Amino acid sequence: MADIPLADPDIGPAAFDRVETLLSRGELADGPEVRQFEDEFADFCDVSHGVATSNGTTALCATLRAFGVERGDAVVTSPFSFVASANAVRLAGGQPVFADIDPETYTLDPDAVRRCCDERDDVVGILPVHLYGCPAPMDELTTIADEYDLFVVEDACQAHGASLNGEPVGSLGDAACFSFYPTKNMTTGEGGMVTTDSTAVADRIARYCNHGRATGDRAYGHVELGHNFRMTSIAAAIGRRQLDRLPALNDARRSHAAYYDEHLPRGPIERPIEPAGARHVYHQYTIRTPDRDALAESLAAEGIDTGVYYDTPIHEQPAYDDVHTAAGTFPQTELAADEVLSIPVHPSLDDDARRAVVSAIATHFEER
Image (cartoon, rainbow, N blue to C red):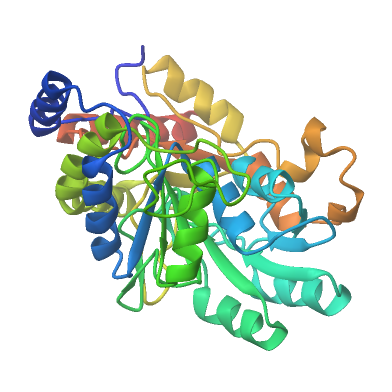
């Protein structure tokens, strides 16, 4: 294990206590604890509804189904993301259509999205990804969506607590999907959440995640096909306590990012930016350099863990060899995939660790 890990999940004693209480009561599956977590997370995102799911991917799949995505429907999304973003479109029955990214934010380039919408007549929605904790340009994207009568679903799986122009991520589109994987800014172990102001959308998602059972029906009234995408009470108990701590956890990430911004060498690497009006929550602090692989090796030799998110864009993944309608040229995505490197920014970093990371990066470039 690296001396300075890239991620260091911190559950906290309050979550342990609550989980122990639920275990002692035998309250394990979906139940009141989940409903409370849904309500609290919806309040945090300043929306009317939250629907908890088993993970971020099932949140995306259920949401796209709720918006009626079916065979022949295209959804514009980013090729520079975890593969779940595009997989969810395919699993819902639709076709992912990729648009290139902004090289500074790594989020969707609105001009590229508009070109997709101009060139195709099968686009039904846009799935922007708030990558690394940086909000996508939602004002521009929702304007495009309004012009073309499209839905917008935020992939907010890396952006818990981020905001844009004072409005929280999770409230910026027609719906938003979050992941609570262990390395995220907050975790439930595994888990997901959908946020929306639409009662109809929330009801459709809740039904789909519960075997198609009518919302509020305690009998076995299954009105449509569905899956078991439910969250457990144990996961919700962890999530509720993590949500209490999320502002402080994000503040710590932002503090570490500010330190890196000030102290990392300025010539050989590019730092992440925080766009005007945005509040970045630094799920990852991602630098870029053409010397990426050698730098990662140097840091590993010093016991510093790093990550590359993502070295193979989705359109180049073997599972996408036959997705011909997603073909295209994405020069900014492909260049970023060759150059990005994420360094430790998790809340548990101390001053010595931050200094060690900066020193190791500076030494690498001095020696070259």
